[in-house]
Image (tube, one colour):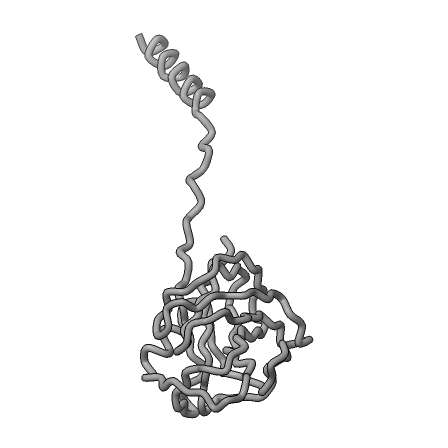
Length: 187
């Protein structure tokens, strides 16, 4: 009887060993898209609409702690119209992406454009809009850096220009703009 019990046990163990299905693995974790760090900063800042007759290239400087993709570009301006939005790589002042974006909902973050723009971790970028009308708020020395998720806003920059020129003048005390984005970290 012991021999039969051992044989049955051995057979069951061998059967379970050879019949185990290799797990195909769990589906990859879905990393949520991170929503607007600029929008969050602005909601806390009470911005004021402005225009002084000049045309500016106004942008937000930022970096990401991880590699990923910008999924949408978003505008928040006090006047509707077509606006040029540009993503700049700060280190060489090169244009990574340039898009026309319609602002049809003045005073809101409802206007967006779906894009898929890869960005590298720990690389400084500026996302700017060319405009005559903008919002501004009085920043302080503690406004930046502002971190939300993997994105850190490091300041604002601008340049008086109708042309698409790198906005290299720091505007950390009176930030203006506004262009925002959603970000999808790489898995």
